[in-house]
Image (cartoon, rainbow, N blue to C red; front, side, top):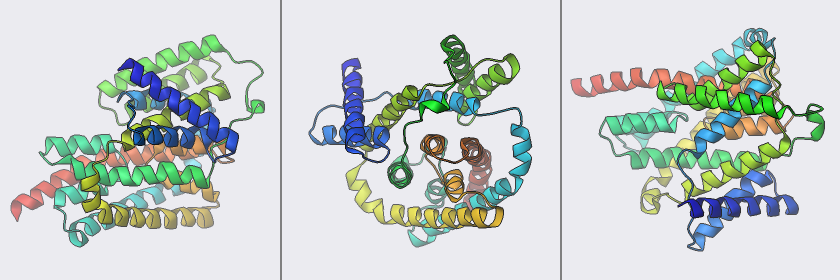
Length: 339
């Protein structure tokens, strides 16, 4: 198993290098994805452990903390209109997708609700399994949306290498080691406590305390970002190889219809945020996209937008849906039992 994992990572790394050499947009992410998918197409073994995303989330959490300065809470006050607009968008998105899946596609109420949740796949699948539902269709609908977001957006808004001028004069590697160790412990604890996006949130909070409370230097070398993008692209590609093609044919129409509706609503609210509140359009789009949190943050870090704004709104989306889903699912079950 370990040999297969190392082989898969090597394939992803080679794909990233080749994609970078030929000038493919977002080379380290998309190159890794394409090379691993091609390898699977040749019927060669590929595998990545399920915990890979936890490591990526930990890295992103520390990266977010590295960009937070003491005036962050002043920014939160400034972002109130964007947060309010996000809440309105999520309400509308959830309602319209539910109606589309239930009435237009004829899916059950439970399937329609769980397919309508923007992101939060792990939490959604937990609800599905606890309710005794077949998670295949739900996972497929979420996967179609996620794979589109993590493939199309890096093509439109390429993830580029961070220039060396963004770095501090010297990287404090001992500080980084201590921060990552404590962040990993905090992320593990948050995950055990069932905190939504626990590894990312716990790691971010621990790193933030170390930076602002104890003066630790958190300056992450650009090469580390390349490595993480290769791992992320490799993990996404391995997940794509597990799609049920027979079920995909049956579900594709509904999944693509829901994707189109999601993009339309998120695009409209992104435009409203841009024109109404003078937020850069790309920043608004990345903040409001319904999924692919790690990729949205990675794009934000490599483009001329505020990664903290994007990360804050993406995390709020995750948290809002995690708290809303149990309430909505309970109301739905109550309504179904009374019919």
